[in-house]
Each structure stands twice: as C-alpha cells, then as structure tokens.
Image 1 (tube, rainbow, N blue to C red):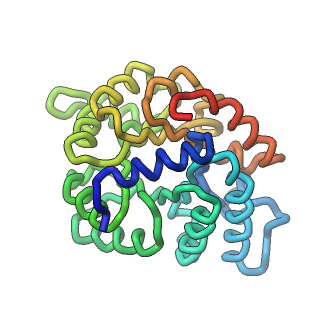
Image 2: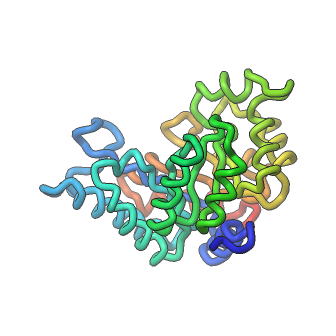
Length: 272
C-alpha cells in the first residue's frame, strides 16, 4: 500500500540528495528502422530487437547513474516487448535512481485501474497522466493505493500545447492553471511543465503558486524539441525541479561527456 500520500515526494527528495542532482533522463530508444535521426547506434544492434533495446537502455542507465536521479522510459518505445520494462526498472533501482513511466495514461476509470496494476507490478515509482478525461481524483487515489506517484500533464512542451493549455479556458482561467489547481486539490504528486519558447516564466510561476510547495515539476523540452540549452532562470522558479534530458544526451557522440556537462550546469539549482 502507498501509505502516506507524500511517499513519491520522499523518494524524489532522497534520490536528489543521494545523487546531488535534479536531472532525469528520458529513455526513448528508437530503432534505426523506425527513424533515421535520433536512433540507437549500429554498434548496439543485435539479431533480436529486444536485445538491442535492452543493451542500449542498460548502457544509458549505467552512464547516467552517478549523475542523474531519475530515469523515465517512454512506453511507446517498448511496445514490441513491454516485458523489457520490468528489467529496466530493476536496473534503474540498482543504480539508485527513481523510475517514472512516461505513459500519459488517460482513459475511463476501469481501464486506468488495469494499467495502474501493470505499472505497479513492474515496480515503477510513478507515471505520467493525461488529465483530459477528467478523472484525476479517482486515478490519484487508485495509484496511491498501489504505491505509485502521479505526475499530471499540466503545460506540455510541444508547440501545439499552447492552443489547448494556454489559449483555451476552463471556468474563465487558462486550462493549464485549472489543471494546476487540480494537481493541488487531488493531491497528485507533480506536474509536467515545458521549458520551450512559448512557456513564459510567468506561466511557470503561476503553476508553482497554484500547486504548492511539495509538488515535483517534471520539466521538459530541452534540446531537439525546441528548448535548446537549459534556461536556468525558468528552472529556478520551481521549488522541486526534475529537469528532463533526452535525445540530446542518449544519442550524442559522447554520452558520458554530455551527461557530465549537464550535471555541472544544473548542480547549482535549488534542491541540490
């Protein structure tokens, strides 16, 4: 059972303290036959594609283990063999990091319940959740009863999110602000917030004020997605940042060098 509702927040705090880092790595291992750019290098390729995914994932997890506090595999990249995720979670935990499933769950309650059972059995610490079905409260309660934290998509980093999350309103407020109030009301564990160009600092400040002090901000959008270098001023707005890196690290020419560079860049932000 989940016990106290802040269990995932405590896991986050412990990992940050132990690693001296607020960095998460997005584990999105695309196969070369699926796309030309940002794909697993040929040196990892095996006859069995599951072996390719696992070998690459393990190598990335080992390389970030001394410098990052969290790993976030994306379900979409493991649909050919979801059993790999259980092995990957074990590896993440062996390296002393927390494991977040980037699933963006969002369905009717009975379907969500089945998904949460599987995610819990795979031993993830938390998952991402889409709020647009409206059933945030029941999902958070169900997830917490299974030992899972819930991180709500609040202000996403892709450009299209500006239309749906900023320019549209619920109850007279921008949708992202309404979602932030739901994160607070339902006792969800955190929110996904982008760092990309359209996400202004004032938006992030608004979300921080609305959710309160003990929510984790999974900050997205650095690198190829459009965020470029880390905007430290935006990161410093939030009290509990978890800065996500992805393609710009895991597919770089020298992963270890890239990991160390971002670690040095971010170790001065609040929380470390």
